[in-house]
Length: 152
Image 1 (cartoon, rainbow, N blue to C red):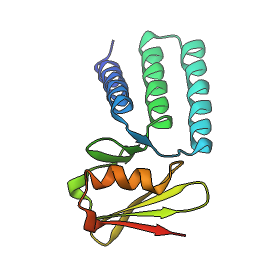
Image 2: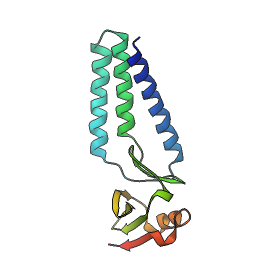
Image 3: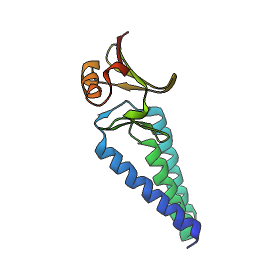
Image 4: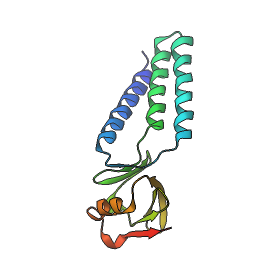
């Protein structure tokens, strides 16, 4: 086995463990894009078929399976709030202390959450919850003067 295959397999397993930990710590989940989930899952299935059926070497098969694991972690990465932080995607994981303002905007059947770092909006999440539930949760963990609740 090559060192690249070993490294890539360890990377895939580490991402899978991190994904499992994040899944168990999630308190409120935001809506995710079904289109992206479907696209990444179809690509992962195609890659799995190509790497297991078509390729001959063990290195290629292991690298292909590791790539499938990584794609599936990307596809099913949770978005929302844990007890201590916001998780929007793989590169937007923020502690509540690093967020300057959170706006909760109530729309028809959902609550839109806009998160700011300074004057820059870093993410927008949509929840199927009412704004009172999210506001109560955030007031316990976030300074009330930096939490804005609006109605659309």
